Amino acid sequence: MISNIREALSRLHREDSGQDLIEYALIAALIALAATFGMGSVAKAINDAFSSIGAKLGAYSK
Image 1 (cartoon, rainbow, N blue to C red):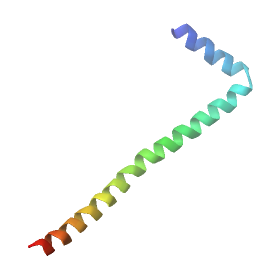
Image 2: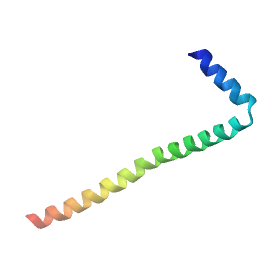
Image 3: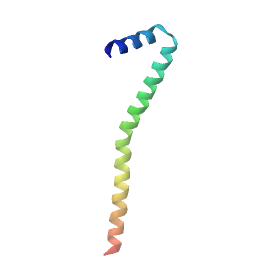
Image 4: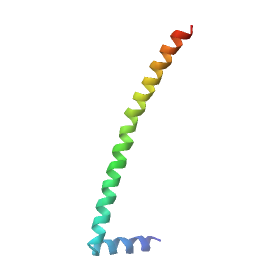
């Protein structure tokens, strides 16, 4: 299995068309990384909004 991976990487290194594939993979990885880090702040904002709404509704139900 390792030899198959090594052979595939060697072919990509020799071919110019493989360079485009690697560039697209790096861009996709960068976007995924940015989305992963961004989700933490988005989730916190959504949680804060629902907590605020819940507190306001709780005040009216008493």
